[in-house]
Length: 479
Image (cartoon, rainbow, N blue to C red):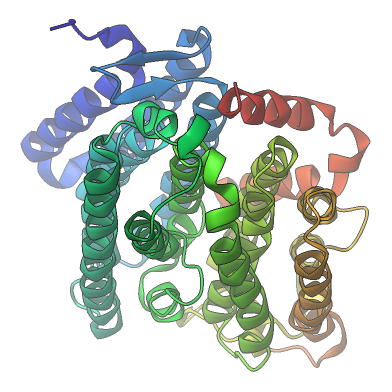
């Protein structure tokens, strides 16, 4: 038996050890530990990101082919780790004010992030499932973290029950794939479809459908989106911000790797399913958000629509399409974290508010905050020259070049419909009569808002670093 090369998985090993060490610090220091553990969690996640960036050297596999490190994995891991670190920072002041400050919270995010890293580097159906479950179990607990809140408990329970169902569907799909190919390893599965065996049997296609169903739940794509609005609304806002960013990156990375690496030669077989899921997500996300009055529910439907847009690139099944997805997901994470930094700042003397109508008059009372939210809303709508426009541009061009004209047209029309509810928020901020103002911004939220806002507004000035990195990452999957 070949001994595994542990250095390839050093970021994951470090994060696992860090999570256990932080748990011990929290247990022994008790009530005084929360702030210390939170900052140590942020540092641990950033160190893991540095290990990912500087530890990679081309494409390598270890643990008997279960685990792969390549440019694609590096790109998505850095994005997921950055989103997790920002989510922990955004949660600190909120948890303290709401009196739900406990040291377990940042540790749960660290463990969930460890699961994401395993998902992104999975090169086998076994490691794929292990990564998903490690992330999911942590997310279930995080969702129900506010134990004295009926809404949060209900959201956590709903997420757990539907998550368990999706895991079962995914596992059933994996078992069918194993049964019809004779292997769980992605490289071996890919070899079984080369040459004369370039078509899949009916049993294998059923397995792929179940796998798509399980993975679609993790990224909240239609028709497995039903948990998203209730969970987004019910859980504490920092948890919503985390759910909207890092797990989506890991889920999309796994979606891409699980279909491009082993089933890349069968793109004609699974492409139509992805096209259907993409169209359904874009249309439902665009229309269902129109009547929403709670801004977190609106962002839930917005996230469903944006996952639909990202899946346009995967449906293309080309290197150009995957590059588009990577650019889209990066811009999506930045826009979402900036928007949730604004939502976390929607606090009046009686507590947090989530109603969109409470933003009335924000343009006069908080001009800078209103201006940044306007940038995020226009970018989410895809208005040029903001970053969101470029995200959609690259996935639509990839779809057109792959001959998927109806998909690109429907995506474009969905963007137009979706623009309505984003622009409505801008109209409420600048043209409606002012309501009670919000309390002063915390420093951390102000910095996050400013940095994400600057990226969103000025992305068009120098987009080449992201485009080049995404192209290199996408190319690693097609070697």
